[in-house]
Image (tube, rainbow, N blue to C red; front, side, top):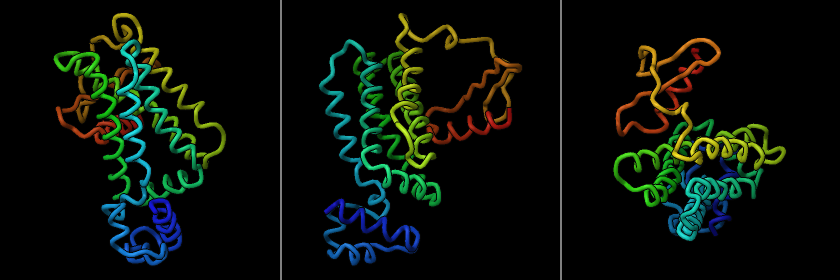
Length: 238
C-alpha cells in the first residue's frame, strides 16, 4: 500500500505539481480512503520519501551488529545502505531529486532526513570513542564527513539522470574520508590546528594561492545545512 500511494502521488506531482496536489487527489488516484493514507504517511511531504524510515531502521540494525575493530569503516558501510536504496529504483530517485530541487519545503524536509542519518552515525561513533571531550567531537565530525561524502557522490549520479554506476563516485568520496580518519592517532596533520588568517565575513577564514584553506566557524547548534550553505558561498566567492 505504501508503494501504491507513493506511485500515485508521484504521478500527480509530475502532472500537476507538488503544491497543487492534495491528499484527497492522491487517495482518489490510488483508490483508497484518507484513513489509509494517514496510516502510512503523516503528511504529503512524507510520501515523497517513502523508503527512508525502512532505510534508517536497516542502518541502525547494521550498526548494532558490527564489531568495534573499524568504526570509521562501519559508518561508511552504513552510508552505502542509503546509496543502495536510491540505486534500487533510479527512475524514482531521479524524479524525487528533481522534485526536491523545485519545492523549497521538500528540500527542508530532505535536510531533516539527512540529519537523522547523520545523528545515527554519530551515535554509533560516540559509543566507540566516548561521549566526553574529543570523543564526541570526533564522532560528530566523522559522521558529518561521511554524510557529506556520500551525498556528493550520490548527487553526481542523480544529476546525470541516473546514468552509470552510482557506487563509483560514492566509494571514491568515502575512501577520502577513511584515508583521513583511519590514520594511526587520528586525522592527518593537515587537520591539526594551523595558524589561520584573519576571519572574513560569516566566520569564514581563507588563505590565498593554490593551497587555499577555508574554515567555517559556527556557533554550537547551527543547523548543518546552514554551515554547508555558507561554505559553498565562500568557495564560490574565492
